[in-house]
Image 1 (cartoon, each protein chain N blue to C red):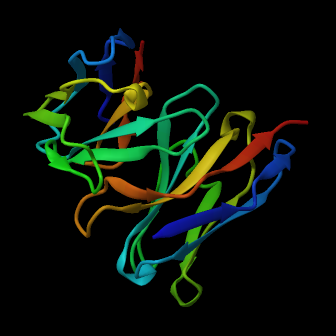
Image 2 (tube, helix red, strand yellow; image 1 turned 60 degrees about the horizontal axis):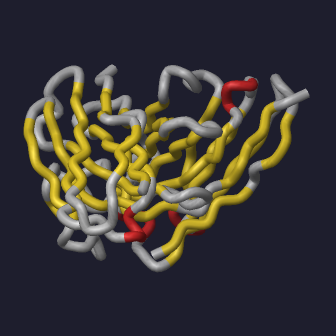
Length: 106
Length: 119
């Protein structure tokens, strides 16, 4: 199975600051990488797929980059509604696997 | 586009449960469908996959031989038959649909149905 490792586990930022979240795969997933945002009591919301393709309704302040095994989700200017847990997911091979999440906190 | 799950609840270890997911607002029969789950305070875990026609299925090793996925395209419904449940199956179960026909990234999720395995 491909293991997805996210860092940091918790990221403290202030509104308006830039946030950078990392995701590493144990083997290449090519560009088959997605990012989700999850708030308490809600299902995940797809933000990005194919590393850098915006999902519908994703604000442009979110951007994705990387390839192979190293990926980054950047929030250019964190807004109050962005405080949540973020997960990366590889869909290169089954079993589909998710990272452990990064919690973005004030 | 919407997915609505049902069927969760409290079940004893070794027992059975059938989860359902009804789709609306998109062409259900054109999409592969998936079940995922999230244990309390844990990350997401892929559970199962089914092809458009239902002829191909796949399962996580943790549920293989115990869970069965199926679909009824005429009723726009997805199912997960759970048997021999264990405490570690306790989770919120989500059905989900991919963002397009080739990417297993999920843009449509149900609200989830909670399964608690306890005696």
